[in-house]
Image 1: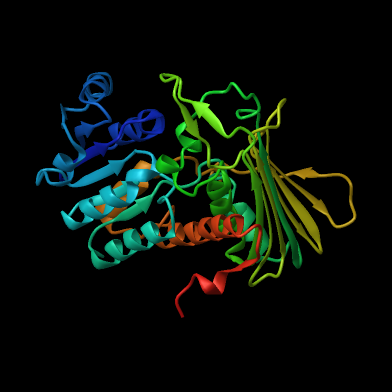
Image 2: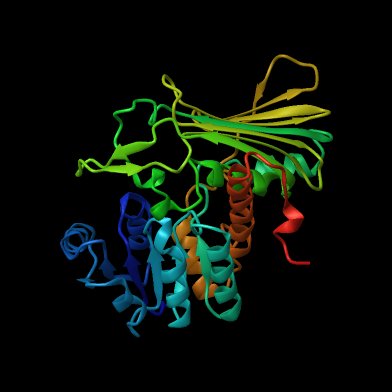
Length: 354
């Protein structure tokens, strides 16, 4: 049985779009990569030629207004996510939006409202990718009580990309492009959300910018750095009551670390996202046991296939829906507000409508 052609337009074609989304859509039967708009027309033409996209648009608005385009993949930095998503939905387009969802909570709320206003359209955010094989196993262990009472959720992600004062400016350090998103804070909290199905009742954040100005590689004009180079977050989860202990740093030279720990009264899980290993130790034991996944448990990257299946088969979006994005953007806003208030404690209840 032949499938009805599904026309995809690309708004932005950065590294992840070219590495993951474009190849992912190419593999799906009946999907046509129709049009692309990038920051410049020249870069869009290069992508179209190299990656097999039929034509180029001069402006992203041409894509959302094109009646022949069924869905859009938004691969820009966060600064355009809200505007492009809302416009696409209002023009009857399904939306796959790159993470992070938005620049701030207000934008995320508007995106969520637009998605709710168009329930016939699929609205999906690209999920945090590094734990996809392990999510089902970890979630099941938490639900089954294998860890007992959840006591602590600890995570750390550090690297040395900001350690040198001479390191160039990047879009991730530019608040006008990345918004309130800091390092990998949002993407790692999204992962924890999947596992524990909980949000912080309250949190306190402390961070620092160690190099106040940096220059983009193509410019000698310094730009103010407002996004922290280092960030620590402490809090309590609402339902579990577990302690939240998060640390992110771009100034830790040497081997990078990316690790999650769920500590419970019966045992502890450690997920090493660098080595892609999941380990368990019973309470009081010093030896960790490596958990081996079956082929069925190893889900892997299926983002584009999931998006198309939701359109064609009306399957619900699970990775990641706009409702989930709204949750991690609420967390992101809480962190930003705590930082702005000299590490004042902020409460989830103050951000959620009753």
